[in-house]
Image 1 (spheres, helix red, strand yellow):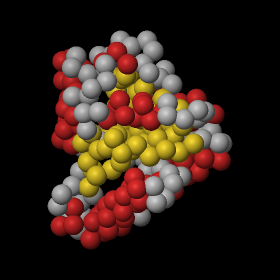
Image 2 (tube, rainbow, N blue to C red):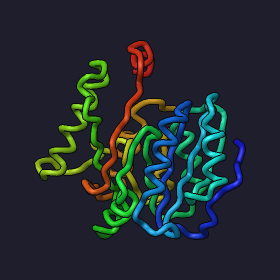
Image 3 (tube, rainbow, N blue to C red):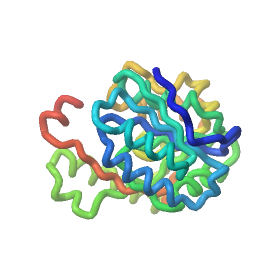
Image 4 (cartoon, helix red, strand yellow):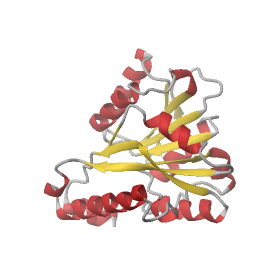
Length: 237
């Protein structure tokens, strides 16, 4: 794994945004622009991106952002090993006590990081935060296999927000979640053998370890899915 010079000089951030990225340079740049607009004071948080063997211009995008100094950003490059391994390496890199994990195709709201941090302190003990995922306005026009998944998640988050359903490990989808770093490490982190549903499997272990799950509607982000072809989706399954 190659370590790249960092634009972040934070010795002890309160919270870190960790993301794995693979051949999504354009969505990633869109996400970084949204992170630049965060309301939380810059000295309180950082961004750690892990490039999972991308062959597009992802590294060039990140290099420009590091050089600009517009974000407390650092990034790592690894051979393609899957997002479980990439996210784990990013979490190892930070010293922040609480970690946000998001996908690289999300568009976060300005209060996103601040809302995650507030929710993490809303209960005593270990708190796992499930942030709200908002589908694109035209998500129903996407291929059926994508639209069904997004519709299901939208209904789930509506039930969580209304209080009809409590937040549990079944809602732990790493498009938008956060958790205590120490608890994550104590439970062994993401299972590197899993390429799908590694998030819910981790969520179950965190729940069994006694973590409290809370839903944070103010920590919302729009999911700009680009699964693409049916064959690509079918292969993932």
